[in-house]
Amino acid sequence: MATSDISMILPRVLIVSRRTVRKKKFVDFVGEYHLDLIVRYGAVPVIVPRVSGVHMLLESFELIHGVLLCEGEDIDPSLYDAELTGFSPEELEEIRKLHASDTAIDREKDSIELRLAKLCLERNIPYLGICRGSQVLNVACGGTLYQDVEKELSKKCTDGSERVSHLNYEDYDGHRHAVRIVEDTPLHHWFEDSLEDEKMEIMVNSYHHQGVKRLAQRFVPMAFAPDGLVEGFYDPDAYNPKEGKFIMGLQFHPERMRHPDSDNFDYPGCSSAYQEFVKAVIAHEKKLNCSAYVPKASKLNLELEMKRKTILRSFSIAKNLYISGHGMISSQGSELITGAEFLEANKALSLQQENRLKQMGATVRNSSMYLEKLMKNEERERFARIIMEKMSIEQLSDLMSLYEMMGQKCSEELEKKLQDLMKEDN
Image (tube, rainbow, N blue to C red):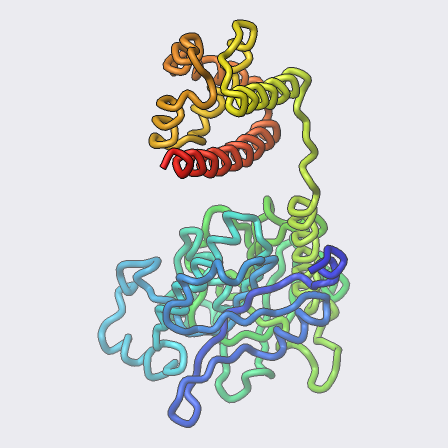
């Protein structure tokens, strides 16, 4: 594929599917609202299927320019909390019955998404977590979750006005509750024009019975529900969309605050999460392309260039001696040493080839100086280290590529010529 074609490919955003049962069979799906917004702002959603073994195949989904994780079942509590927060067996059973569609733990999805979240954190790949995706991000960084928000937080809410219903099974898309936005955070900037006076509140859609209990240390809260639950957080050290940095989790659903059959939302800022996320994805892709397609210019200094020419001359002298069959004159001894050092260091000759070469005297005849220098491994290694310590990473990479290529070609040619000589002797 030509470089011009590559530049036209849109950046890729990985989204892990959720599975459900349809006609007695598992079916993988992703909410279309997420897919539509990713495409709208200039990226391509790549769906990672939630099937057994995919967590071991994530390298096959490279290149990864961004990751969006969204809906799904409860995360396995053993991944963040050994104890079940003191619930009685009766309470646990009540939670399972009330939230039957969410409490069936999917360990394969957990494994896939936690690996992707940690990959994003390691490589600075843009990450947006919505609902469960925000919980995955928090757990990946050492945070914990409430097993059941209503049961655990309701105990702390002495004032009835603080109680919050975080889901409504009868009105999934229409359900709303208030959140208080933290000043000078990305959410504040996105919704600033929609905030009434100094109230700093908006009404959001949510659908969850679990949530962040202890926020991982690296994150800063962006919004709170009246009961104190963290509804949004981000990493301020990894947030600059224009530079390809975006690590964020939102417990509420901005995509479900979109009006039916319309491009309008409850607030103009609702789409900003996806818009800024994709902006970071595009910037991240450009950074990767720059590092991948800018050729490394050769920066060998004069000393190294002279060394390279000396090696080539050494091979040329050895070749002429091999072809002519004449002995070596004294002035050629020092020039052959460089070639010997190169061959030894890069192991271009197998032991069998070296034995044949010595027995036949094909390259250097009556060369006591050559053999003596060939055995001085420590001196050669010291000399090589002195030179290489002064070289940059690019110079070492260029030199290594040159040596590997020359060593391989030399080895192949020698093997061919030695085989031809053996045939002639027979």
